Length: 456
Ligand SMILES: Cc1ncc(COP(=O)(O)O)c(C=O)c1O
Image (cartoon, rainbow, N blue to C red; front, side):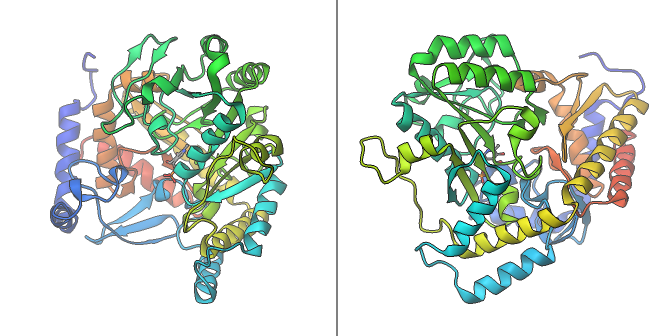
């Protein structure tokens, strides 16, 4: 792409951002080096790493975190989504503290988890039956198993660039920068080594938000298709792009016609996009859905559920050959359940979502204004309390658009923001919480101005 006049060249942006980042983080750098001796890549989880090395966090409160070098940050990572109430919300902290003293892991049913399930269903009536899990990945894995078991079919369709966790089926055309097939007929690509050898044979790709192509692909594979899974707002790899109501309606109609399970993966969106869940903003209800992240207020808690018919077929007591296995030593642990109940108490009684959304809107508008004022070709995408910036693009509709944008410039900008005290690492879209305020907006915009003018 030709250099635009007046803007700082990407190489210069990257040089200045990295120099400032390194200069203020000598202890994080030293810890990162030490950690490389025990953790491959120096991290215990790929999504914690970014170049040149990640910050090591020392403490968190409200909308801010501090690192081991005593830098303070406006946190726009928020634990990659869960901290919707802010870090250390007193109601959640108290609930956890009290429960830890009572009992942590009996591995037998507890009454309070049933109460939480009933309260979640009160908000999301399409979860007629549900089961708790610890992580979003366990929930999505179980949801696709329900779909396969209940339909007796083998294929799962996912949207190119949608992320659904760490199971083999989902590490296909999600993170990879490699694209196969055409825009309208994407073909699956394995994102990593080590996946089951036949994984690509079990996955069909849909082009996100392309109504006609997606419907044609679903019709074409209908006889073998167990489920279609999609994110209501394509988040980590998808560029913070909401599914359109037209897309959701078309996929709903096509899946219903062929008795294919439609699965909304609401792990990131649950509560954050409204307590009533995706049907309230997409206009159609799925057969199955997964929720997580904010549901546990920072504790490991997720769930999958859906229509009684589908869930009972795959998990109920009635004898049959099509039962799936879902369980786990830590599933339904009382500490996560109490945190989950406390989160709902707060969300039902305080305008957390309104605050998180309003601050995110101010950040989106302010960012776009600064980008325009600095002559950048860049766009801010998102919805509700979620957003992402993309350089070298005016419109982002899907993963292919993300990959065609100026990824290196986006990375240099976001690293610069971290260097200037905004924790928005170059690997995740930004999210806000009920604890963010106008001062945080101002800090983000000041940092943006400093980075875009390559202030040393
Ligand atoms: C939409 C979506 N689904 C599933 C997952 C996986 O959740 P977890 O990291 O809890 O396994 C994530 C995590 O980022 C997600 O954003």
